[in-house]
Image: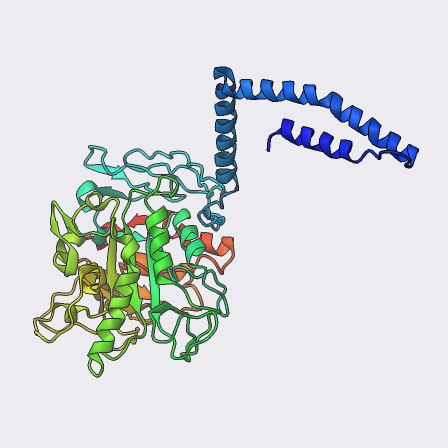
Length: 481
């Protein structure tokens, strides 16, 4: 029923209610007045109805309606995107331990430059670091190595371009990637701790891989590869477990971005497995355990060192080439080392389980790390058979430091031909004197340290031994030439 019809119906209804004859005159008068008013409205309503109908049928009216409808649609879309939940921002990068900004060295060969530090959005700048220095390609036979951290407080060591290889470099190394400290009872924060280490300029990260025997809150499910800190008695002393996958994801997302100091230099990721199912007694559980580690590394696939113009570096095929090729060849790559025996993935037994490369730890590992001496007990590390040419070893730092001078020289001579890692106590750092002996007498490549638990002053004393460089050149007498 239209507006006009409704008005007319109301008037008719009121007129029918006016009393006839002898009735209540006051009530009749009121009803009559209402009828008169509604009667007067009738022509106005009729005219309004005609005008409205005419407006909506005109071109102008249609255009205005279309504009209003479009405006409402636009408003609705805008409100949708405004109110839509935002994606989670990347983890906030915490401030790294303060590293110094030493004066430029004097009396060194070549020229040392100190580029400015790039700003890192939403985070504090890292004191004493630089974004990246391409001093490798100087065109000179000799140059001063100043890559990464700012120029050293002590004279930097001259090294030829051909000598800038993994064998001849001593990287600052992180002891427990993902662990924020303190020791004991500290906790893992796999993303922020890893980002913090990268932001400080470190390019060598150690993962201490283990598993829980029982399910427990804040720890990974039992028998699942995870990161743990154990005390000398074997008891778990970290307040939770770390996530291998989150460490890998953080490396993939941040290590090769310009915000990270030395971002073009390779990452060395050492998978030190402390516990795993017994390889001999439970080979199926062992290989499945290693496969889970491989799956966790999948975020690193785009940067994993694999097929290159130099050859295929997967499955430890080119360990010798890896150690003696100038490091420039591996810029932007993640190089993976492990103390695990991954040869079972290569089994030709028809009944053996088959794994695709993403789940095959043997495929991921570029270099096998063997136990240097059977005097040491370091996780699942084993000494190499006599017919194997060893490319990398891991040793107990305390045993090495206790060697007599002649045996230290013998050990250092061996290290001219192999990559060497020394692990000390999980709970304490080596002293500056220990680091000095490790680098300058034993010729070790990597001695992982903790940068989160000690004070900045203590960390500073350790990094001074490296001249504050993430890849320090070995002393000339200890290099492979």
